[in-house]
Image (cartoon, rainbow, N blue to C red; front, side, top):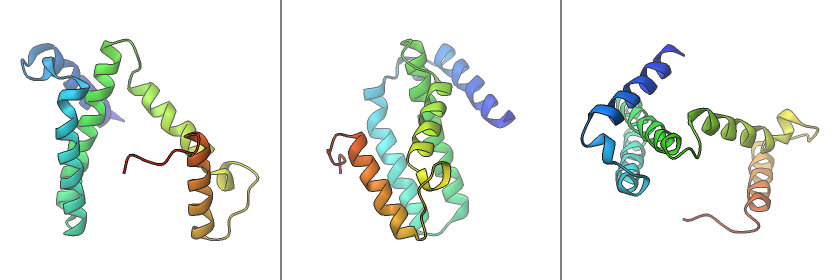
Amino acid sequence: MEAFGRLLDIMDELREKCPWDNVQTNESLRANTIEETYELAEAIINNSDLEIKKELGDLLLHVVFYAKIGEEKQAFDIADVCHAICDKLIFRHPHVFGDLHADSASFVEKSWEQIKLKEKGGNGTVL
């Protein structure tokens, strides 16, 4: 998508030319990411499509930012992030991409949680 490529180009330029952007790290961005997530939650509660769009953009910026940092460390890039989520979605939807039959949303939810627990070795989430 043209718009996504534009965002990636802007991030490249910000990391190169902006004194604030070029010193950010995963850790320095963490609190801001949490704040942006709460702002999205508030926009959803307020049922404001305009605010949801704005806050989704802010979170997308953070995803691109973390991916750029990963690229600079030669750990991963945005394509790796996209491939990882694609693989995860396919794996966690065996009722769509595999042989499992799901006849209700509650079945899908239970299946999703079981798959997540297997992936994490039985550990729960950070929350």
